[in-house]
Structures are given as C-alpha cells and as structure tokens.
Length: 215
Image (cartoon, rainbow, N blue to C red; front, side):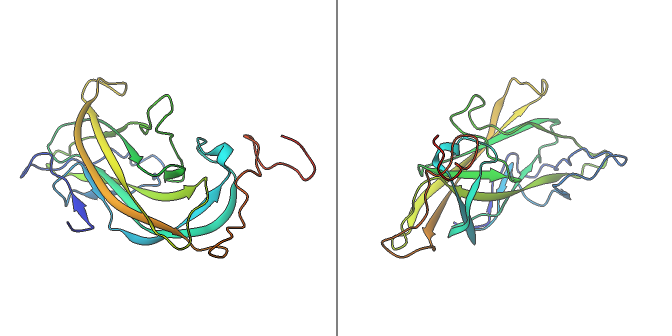
C-alpha cells in the first residue's frame, strides 16, 4: 500500500469545502479543493522527530517538554479531514495507537484516548459550495514519548484514525464514516545504546520539580 493513503466515502461524488468566513481570521488549517476520494487522507510516512515529556503528564494536552529532540520515526506529518459526498454536517475524529507511552498531537494539542471524550477531537463543520466543489481541512501532526525508547531496536506499531459525522448538530448523534490504519515506527537518537540520560520522572503533574523539592 502506498504511504500516501486515500479513503473513499462515495466514489465519483463531489467534495465539500469547509466554511470559512471572509471577515473572520484565517484559521491555522488551510481550505483546499477536494482532490481525493475519501474522508481521511493521511500524509506519507516521513522521517519526523519526536520529543520527550514527563511520564506524570502523559495525559495532558500541553505538558512540559524535557527533551525537544529525543528520537525520530517514520511518521505522517499531517492529516486531511474531508467531505466528498455532498453531505453537509459536523465531523469529528480520533487517532489511537498501539504503542504504550507514546502520544500524538494535532496542531500541537493531545487529546487522551482514555479520557472523557475517548480521544475525539472537537467537531468541525464541513459544508457544500453552490458550485459543488469540495475541500479538506488539514491538520499538522506531531509526536511525543513519556517513556524511554530503544536506540538499537526500532519499534513498529500502528495508528488508527476514525472519522464520524453528525447531520443533527455539533453534539451528535455520530455515525462512523471512515477508518484508516497506518503502520509506523520510531527509534531513540539521544544518549548511548545503554544510557538514555533522560529523567522521565523529573516533573510533578503541574510542571518540573524544583531542585531539592519534593513532589
């Protein structure tokens, strides 16, 4: 399977564009004409760095970074969420992975898959233009680890994205419309083969522990 993956909702149907007000501030993601036949489009696996955070903050959306460059992996750097079947509605998605102590961020924020929302991102509204053209909203992916990784053995695992749609409103009810799984891998690049040199226990749940202080 090609690294650049396309998933089909309804083949041959027109795509829909995200609603962006002319008077509003341009959002961090870009709108584009629909050029794929699917609901989830995951970018190709690319050599991508990931950082280290404290284990006590693994479930937080924006934890303390204890090492900015900890390792790298063959990982996608973006995801497009699209509507191509001319159905106006709200869309939400989540990503789940099979590697313990590894977290995925979307536009710099992590939503824990074991939290109250089960990892689902805030819903976005996708509409259909009068001319029938469609588009996608693109979101940047970044990665972090809250536990030590191997410097000699690459760890292989998978990430699964699940997309749901609601035509009844921002709060649901939700119906799954697409799902896609990608095989990825990571390795540590810091330290030596036998010594990581990173203290994953140096933080409290609120932040770093000051020298000489107790948690």
